[in-house]
Image (cartoon, rainbow, N blue to C red; front, top):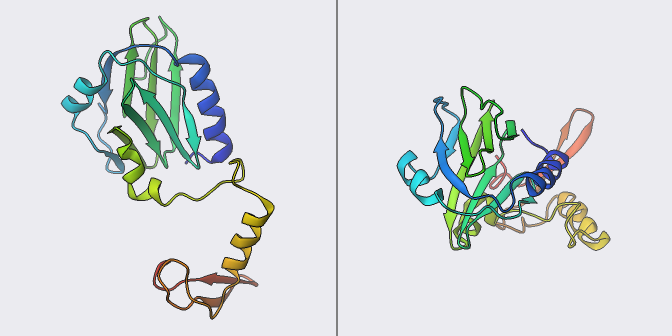
Amino acid sequence: MFELPETLTLTRQMCESVAGKVVQAGLLGNSPHKFVWYNRTHDEFAGMTQGLESGRAAARGRWIFLPLGPRRMLVFGECGGRLLYHPEGVARPAKYHLLLEFEDGSALSMTTRMWGAMGLFEDGAENDHQYIRGMRTTPVDPGFTEGYLRELVDEQKAAGRPCPRCGSTVVRIQYLGGASYFCPACQR
């Protein structure tokens, strides 16, 4: 699974290689995988991506966001595998879970190894996705301050206090020589 450093590197590389390119064909997986989730059918994805210009990729947590045209967002979430740029004339992978072919002959492919979500959203609807909506600030976000870090630490050491999400009592357990704090209702 891509971790924060990889998502930052991949988004920088995507900005350098695919920003401004026009999608000639958008293809979803030609290799079935039980743990790859899409929110569109193959035909919907193809029709909704053709002719759109790719924007500048951005990372939020371990998720990668690639704008397509003025109103669509392609999201790679919790993915592990290979996200590759293919210059014109370079062979594409035989098996893939997502492939964007660009008008200049280059392409972007995603091949998942473990699991991952690939969604195409319209008009900001990606922000309503349950995992995206619940994202917290990461250490590379402007909102990650010393005060925010203290809040996170205090939240974790909240045994006996109500969970900020559901109100259940936070418990403390011994684990591998240390202590863990969790909400038994929210964090099973």
